[in-house]
Length: 203
Image (cartoon, rainbow, N blue to C red; front, side):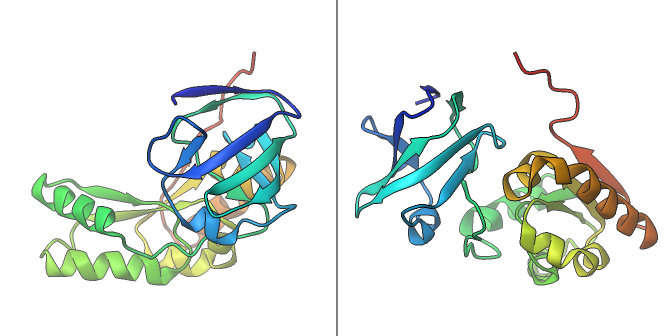
């Protein structure tokens, strides 16, 4: 499935798999660990909202509250909940090794929740004798905002990920959140960039 047309009041079935023909594949079990009846699911940068109607051992059935094309690889967020992702996965470790081998200057860390996530990356880079590589912390979640000052202090560069922040906060709050992150980054003397959903025009 690359693109799925979802209509309001239509049923969508999320299944724990990397590829399947009888539902929307979700390769991460963390979504299913926290999903409960009545939860609101947001994806496609907040354009698609769904309400969970049934949770079984094979997957999650939800009712679409909006109409949109669901694209492959989009982040799934359950409103008001956080996933318990490990700080560094095997894939992350392999990516760090790739970065070192290619002599890159920066790496961007996704779903940073605390300064400890940055310290874990630094510890690996230290073992790889590559502490000169700079770390960009992507600010995407509520937990990151709760620890924003500590994260800014620990990393080298801040990225304001507007698209993912829009899954965790009301869209009307994103401009003020963006301004807060920029102001704190400037205060601590750290460079900051703003990414996604800047000039997009909806049809």
